Length: 246
Image (tube, rainbow, N blue to C red):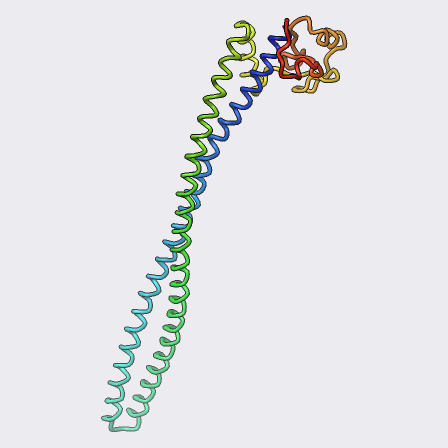
């Protein structure tokens, strides 16, 4: 029976390593998906900056057109000033020219602010474009690395599956069925060592009489709490690599 238990221990170790490799296989694609989501955010931010840049350029054109219109109106008002005949009309013309000039100064100040914002946005645009290019390069590099990792993991999995197949052939069919069922219902662990009278999976103590039977190793036993197949964890034969003889 010890030989069968030792095979089950090795089988469980093999299944654990297979599970770890399967998890690692999922990590690579998940990392790439995370990077792609991050890239989408960067591209969205870049698009927003581009829209703001275009909006500012449009505002600048509109302000410049308004300034040109005001300059034209100032010229026309100056001509009108030269042709007035009364003091009242003269004062009114001066007031109109002064108002136009003040409005022109206000628009010119606004135009300067817009130009400063455009310069800032152009700097951000250039930096954003570079950032996206570099990030895309990182994504492509990570894709290549993940592809290599997956190939290596597939090779390791293939070897472990072959190893598992050998263990399955070496164990009693009925016992293997029990192992697979327990493993499915117990988070991947069907076999548990018992050390100092305690099951190392559910951490519940084994009754003294049963623990003594377990130490003798005369038959297959199960934990009375979690129902996993149990073995004496301090058995030197089961701890070693050499399969004990029946």
